[in-house]
Image 1 (cartoon, one colour):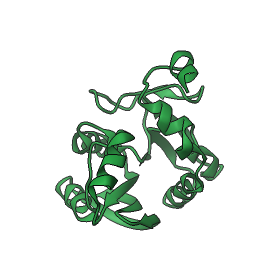
Image 2 (cartoon, helix red, strand yellow):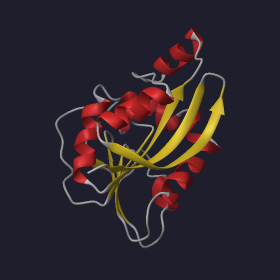
Image 3 (cartoon, one colour):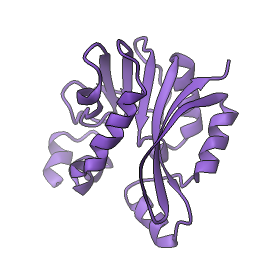
Length: 187
């Protein structure tokens, strides 16, 4: 793993997330299939926190895709840090944040800025439920900063004026539930 941070290395926090055991799990593709089902044909898609651009292969061929991330894990990634001041450099219809909000310092602020720039947001979040201290520690070890229940997540979305149009379950295990949501503004 050490070679990656030297060779590709914009952010060492990404090494285990994208090149560790998580990168090989089938649920990544299932999450992307569920997210793609929430995106209309012909949409201009901004994949924020795209990593290796796995979502791209699941989108309808008529979609336009731009992947944004902290690092250059894929040669087509546009570098963008959602924890800093940012604006999307081009217009998009849909913004996708799969497994991103848990890792941001200010997820509400980032989501608010993203939602203002697009017609719809598709996100996934691993919600905790009846999580043990061991569950929370494991989450923190991979960089998760937020351990919201699904109710907490719904409250955040409501406060931002975002309405849920679709909800899909990626997986559920003791202590956690991974959901994909399609959101639109209530305005």
